Each structure stands twice: as structure tokens, then as C-alpha cells.
Length: 138
Image (cartoon, rainbow, N blue to C red; front, side, top):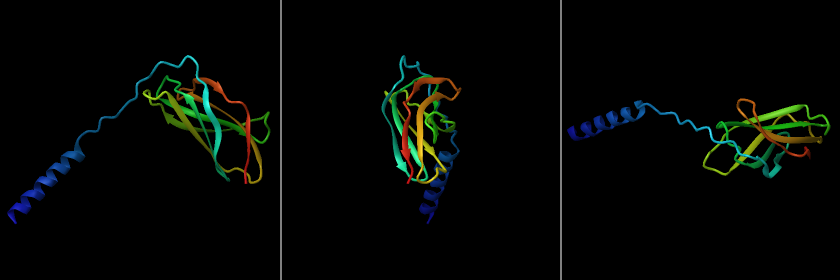
């Protein structure tokens, strides 16, 4: 019994040390901006219901680690007045970045037009916009 009590005490001490150790936050470094950011794949629809996810890939834009994928959309291709955006953290070790933006509350059996772009968290544009594309909800 004494051996069991000793083991349990050691487990409690080790466990408390593990959970009380300070956690160092990882901060991604700011990297050099890419000379030319371009879409290398997409944009394309990942899901088509009352919720749509639009996905595209670009070369890594660089700059600050926090970026946003942005979709401008609407029912008129000349008036893309609605916006959806999604945050992403760049991985400076990857040459490509995949953006995914979810659009909610779409009307059924409606054609929507959209274009995509990306920006740094400070609002600085990454320098590309897609052509206008379309999808129709079910």
C-alpha cells in the first residue's frame, strides 16, 4: 500500500507540473511579401446548399501572418455588394495558401455571382482578385 501511495503522489506532482508550466505563445514571423500573388487553383464551390464554402489556392502572399480570405458576392454580377471573410494564419514554410470562406443564409434556387481576394489583417490588399464566377443554390 505504501508503494501505491508513493506512485500516486509522484503522478499528482508530475501532473501538476505539466499543467502549471507556462505556455509560450507561438508567433509567426512577418515574412517578405511575394512579388506577385496569384490564384493557382479555383475559386471553386466546396458545398452548395443554403451554405456555400468557396475555396481557392494562391501562392503564399507573405507579409503579416494573419490574413483574410474575402468573397464579394450578390445576385447581380455588376453589384457584388455583400461580403464574407474568413481569417487564416499563413505558414511561412509553405509555398501555397488555401483560403476557405463560408457564405451563410443564401436563398434557395438563386444564382449568385462572386469574386475572391485576400488581405492582411491590417486591411492591406494582397494584390489579386479573381474573375467573377457564379453558382446556383439548390
